[in-house]
Amino acid sequence: MASYRLFRRFANWVEGEEVYPIPEIEKNGSSVREHPITEDMARVRSSDEGVGTLLRRWMDSPQGVAAFRRVYTVTAALLCAAIVTLLLVTVSYLPRFGAPDNPANNEVPRRYIEQGLSETGAINVVAGMILDYRAFDTLGESNVLFAATVAVLILLRDDGEGKKKKRAIPELKQEPERERPDPILRASAAVVGPFALLYGVYVILNGHLSAGGGFSGGAILGAALMLLSAAFGQEKLERVFTARRCKALTFLALMCYALLKSWSFYTGANHLPSGIPLGTPGSILSGGLILPLNICVGLVVGCTMYSFYACFRSGGMRDGT
Amino acid sequence: MNIITIFLLTFLIVCAVAACLARNLLVTVIIFMGYSLVMAVVWLFLQSPDLAITEATVGAGVSSILFFLTLRRIRTIDTLADADAEREEEVS
Figure 1 (cartoon, rainbow over the protein chains, first blue to last red):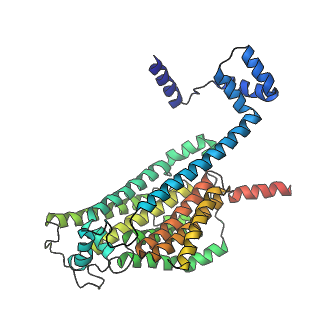
Figure 2: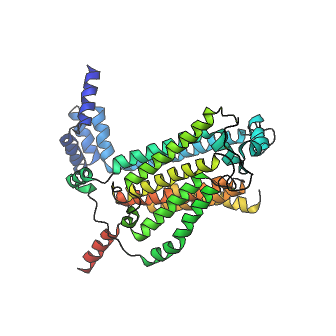
Figure 3: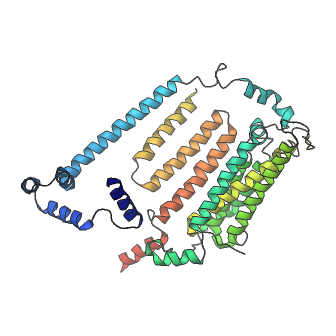
């Protein structure tokens, strides 16, 4: 029976009805503030009410609130100190940073460092690791980003249905975006924006040669797009970047990644000959599949970042045609 | 462990505590931004430039912008329109 009551309460809560009746609480609250605490307690005792009501009334009184604040502060500080101590003690048990006999220094990183260049053709060992040895993990990560983009677009999309809902709920109504030509932002974005875009492309294309790669480069591209969108208005970028195109681009990049890597797995993986030349280490067209995979990851990340921005900013990207 | 590293790590701790204690959410986000930038430099000192680039873009750039936008959407930051309305009220 108790479980049925609990379920009814949950169902009411889901349907938006108040679980606890409001008038009773309001009555309590107003009566407490009018009477001093001692009278209140006496009245409660005489009328034989439960301990819970008494406690609630005491909590509503100014003394109760002050005491609660004090207890809250002290408990928070104590908990914080305890967690900090626990973490510091744990850290003191960790092996020293960079020590040669660390458990992480086993045959796996040794193999990566010694054979990485000849097996993957990438000078940047990190790129060789995440896009060659561990390329399957990176595909999973890109899919997580795609799922996040789709979820955000579903929740915050800007179409007729969404507008109707916004009209129904006045708090969520978006005021018309007043584009203010901010001269400082515009001038600096006009100078920095193109270089930031170019730098993002450089970081993606040079992922197998120097530090960086698809994720960092894609994030730089996304940040540059955000800057341009903030400076020159979202409408201008929406001529190129609509939600539909963003989704299509992300999907194509992921398909490309999956197909390229499938080919590599189809031919046996493990660096068996797959017909893809590794090239001379150091030149831009080297590293086998790493360069195209980097481009795919960069596109996915850049689209994700920018569509997050567009959705968070003004209630969604337009779907476009 | 040279003196610059110690200085940066101290700055990180100060930033982390300040971000918790700041009352204004906008200030918290800006402190967090500074934390990420210094963290990027620390990554560079730990010889991981890949992480440094990512931390500088995602930590200091993208996530802060998303935080700003969220704060504006939940009306924690005064939007331009609100500020204008207040000014008009003061004038009239």
